[in-house]
Amino acid sequence: MMILGLVRWMQPVHGYDVRRELLSWSADKWANVQPGSIYHALRKLTEEGLLRAVATEQVGARPARTTYEVTPKGEDEFETLLRGLWWNFSEPVDPFAAAFSFLPAMPRPEAAAALRNRANLLRAGIESMRASLDSDWVRNTKPVHVGWMFELWAARAEAEMAWCERIAEKIDSGVSYLPAELENAEGWPQWTDGAEPSAPNAE
Image (cartoon, rainbow, N blue to C red; front, side):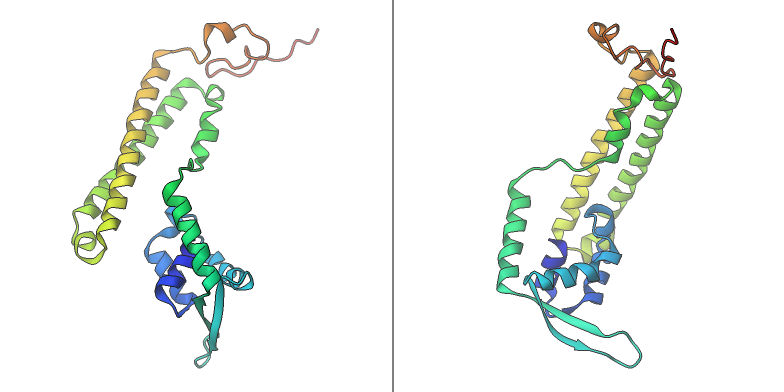
């Protein structure tokens, strides 16, 4: 959607300018749009009839540049994608959740320390976002909704930071990772609190 939307906004536009604009938005960090995939995406969108190549030009020894614009089919697709993301909620993919699901595999001191480190990293990110919100860069050179997006990111980070610190305290306090009903249930005794799984019985 990002690439389709930017072509729609900037058309007619070269792929180079789309790439430069996305990088200026740091979209590779928050929208999972990788710079190396942009030209491939433009070609694919063209093959699918969502974009059309309106010109290809070459200046001197520079690589040839193709200019794109959105087709009527592309307009419809952008509107569908845009409203789908506005009106629906989907959980973001978080690699940390996969790691946290194996909490018992981590020694307690290390797990608590890692959570506090994560909280510190989040705190630094929040401070950076707050500084950006107070800067002339955001206030005078960006649309108002860019600042609102920074506020959303900061609010999410603050909530996760508080969670990390709270769970680190629980881990340090020795709270059991298993409810009493599971401690002796089949398959669960190996999930001990930060200890190595017990070796299978050789008998």
